[in-house]
Length: 543
Ligand code: VG1
Ligand code: CO
Image 1 (tube, rainbow, N blue to C red):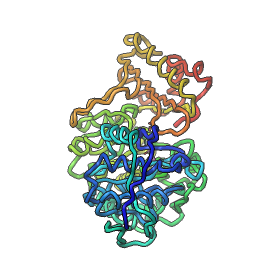
Image 2: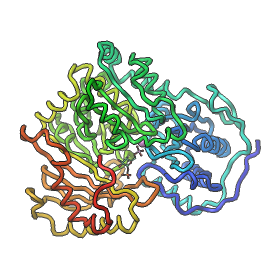
Image 3: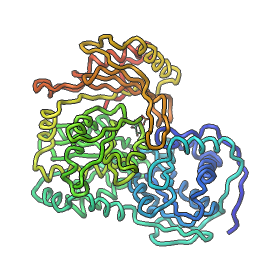
């Protein structure tokens, strides 16, 4: 089959955000749009030649077309072997694991995570490197630069490919292995957790509910929770992946997972209620009568991890993104472990994980994972919680209450102002930045400001420095306000305001987060002049 060199013109908008390139489906459907971006990757990563490439996606609309395009281009660019999930499916953590397990030179992950799918929804592509982590800032910049000057790409015409038939096919000398998307991942989970204890816990009548939200985790939850751990089939909701995610918004949080919150607070609620997002890397955890905020989940899991089979040798460190609540810092301190604070985005954890400096990492955006893979991992967090419940025999609520009694409680909320005009969002950031200059030493409500700056991160492992990673006002350990603009949206700008308040008095552990954080919310509005500059009276999404 002859390799074709197709002439193309650059698009100038292929700059990846926090986690890959995300655009409306229609943008990706423009002639040569995806091809340009993929060729830019092939051009910047010569190691793909003669090597293995992993390909998969979250199953959303356009996934199959994109995979066909990617496989034809891989063959034309000299890739030796493609390993692709059956039906084009691979969850993000499972793809990262496959890259590691196979020693692949990289992977294409077709996903826009939790963003809605379908012809009018979003599409996206992430490039993960050898080792399984997302391409870092440097490589991402080079790919973007290449995409702005690209003039041709390589492909094959009319390849014959059956994505639904497991086994090996050959395309122009390149082998294409279509694999079950769950097998390797399920094996990995079995090596980390005590499946016997969890099975026993379920057999004793403890109920759980997992919502796959018609996205990629359906087959994973079905195999692991139902077939391997013995949960009834009804424990997994919306288990069939659909191209439009059933018209839903698979972003597991208090807003899009409201039905799960209602379930958790209803009579006869299951012991554990959980959900994952479109590509399977996020998790939401609820217990009977309680929502576990992601920062707390990270802290609790870190504290219990050494009791779980895969982590018996102990932890080497804990890492969290800067806006994530500092609950994990207290656990790290008690366990005499280093605590690393990184910018938002999982790629910043990867060097720490590779260097053996962190065992567990977490983000406030419902992301938690460990060194077993190089992406956040929704089902991993659910299984870790199940294992903790099984070995402690306590309900989620008791675990949280005990945790807060021992460490104190970090009240946390994120207020998102979505789909703002770009200039309005920028104006808020500028106003907030402007107000930081004279804040140190001043009072913010009851607390004194000890630090007011823009966060930048010096990665001591590769020496890189990431600047402009969020504005913050810190009042010692007591309170914090963080502001940054989202890097994953496809429409307008999203302003994220993160609020955190710490209380350790036993009488102050059971407030409503919204009440506890109201003074900080008002301060954020005042310092960033949010209402005045955006015309919004309230955030559009609070989690
Ligand atoms: C958001 C979250 C961030 C997360 C990223 C990708 O980024 O805040 O914590 O790593 O999404 O998650 P931003 O720039 O919009 O705040 V996912 O599940 O979309 O791969
Ligand atoms: Co995701």
